[in-house]
Image 1 (spheres, rainbow, N blue to C red):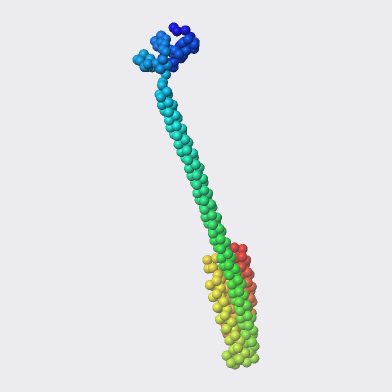
Image 2 (spheres, rainbow, N blue to C red):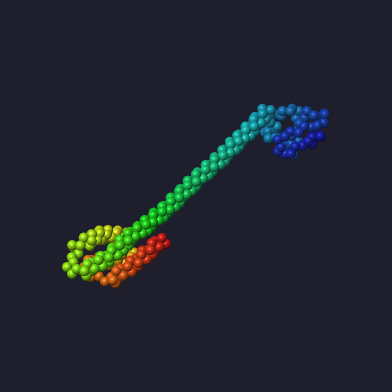
Length: 273
């Protein structure tokens, strides 16, 4: 083996120089356990040393270019992938933001719809209550008005019928030939009471149209109204025919008072509802 030779490993492509000054231009190769020496820095390519020779400058440059190209391609691929990844993330974030905005708009729209529906329902409820209150107020006002007229007219007819009864009775006592039709005072009173009776009947008809015939309290009030009306007619006709008695007028006044109480109770019930 040559002295001062750094022996390469077998199969290595590198060539190691001999460091002594005497043989510094020599190079060595190791091949199959033997060290080969040569004075040329460029060893002739042979079958035996081709595998171990260092590449030439052109080969090295080409290899460097290939490596640079490979690294550039890898870098470009990585940069392209990174750019794609960033773009995808940006797109995902944009889509997420857009979806979030759409959902917020939907939620806001739905919330507005729900609020408006609740407001409409609340207004409908308030309107129904207002209408119901107006109906009750209308009913109560008319009950009071119609019954006030009916009771006043009936009571007036009853009282004046009793006066007419007493007047005719006195005239018959004074003159057996007395004729009420020839008595101007009696005829004037009869005419007046007839007009009152017609008005009273009209008021009774209004009451019948006003009250609810399906309600028990209303039907009872209607029944009491009819009784008072018929008794009022009995007082009027009986005064002309002289068929009444003091109890007739007393019973009529008692029923009028009962009618007042029942009408007042119906008004209270309607207010309570």
